[in-house]
Amino acid sequence: EDQVTQSPEALRLQEGESSSLNCSYTVSGLRGLFWYRQDPGKGPEFLFTLYSAGEEKEKERLKATLTKKESFLHITAPKPEDSATYLCAVQARAGGTSYGKLTFGQGTILTVHP
Amino acid sequence: DVKVTQSSRYLVKRTGEKVFLECVQDMDHENMFWYRQDPGLGLRLIYFSYDVKMKEKGDIPEGYSVSREKKERFSLILESASTNQTSMYLCASSLSPLTQYFGPGTRLTVL
Image (cartoon, rainbow over all chains, first blue to last red; front, side, top):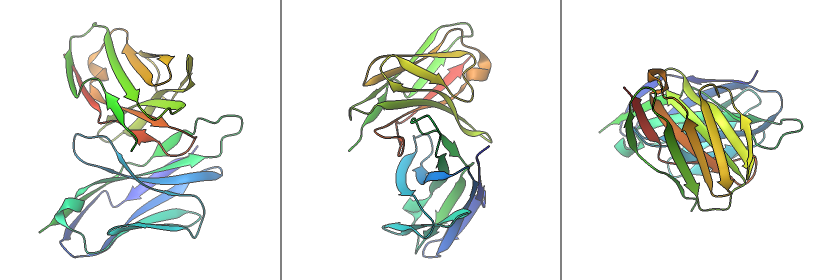
């Protein structure tokens, strides 16, 4: 069974204080690992897809990296508007199906104080 | 940009009512999904569809059904709403088996 564990559950940062969020996963053959941002009361907003170990992707103050067992979302010099819940999800290579089920972690609630 | 819309942001229903939640995407995606999101339980897949009139059960299909008569529209039906179906319902769509794009969500309260 595919599993995703995110840590920490909650993270409080001061504006400008860089940090990282962790996503550990077990999956029977990784097709893709996804990061989403979710604001309170809204749907998840897609950030990144990573496909293979060693891959990195960046968007503004966010950088996602991937190893064979975990992914990190690095936040450089965060601002209050980066406050949100960050969700990680994995998709396995499913034999005989093409729909692409996602298995989500519980998320990390990030709060950035001015 | 991908646009996924859901018929209501907030909905309040009574126990036993039949409830329809509708989702529309404008990007000609083959795959559409319904999730529910609850505190401490995360996002859980209810049903998905990979083509018109095709549907597959997800992890928690009990008490729900779905309909996909047109490619752009995917409906979630609660045949007889119960209080334990109070939740945030999220629709998503994808072109390939990969990246899913989510709608804004419907907060359903069943009294």
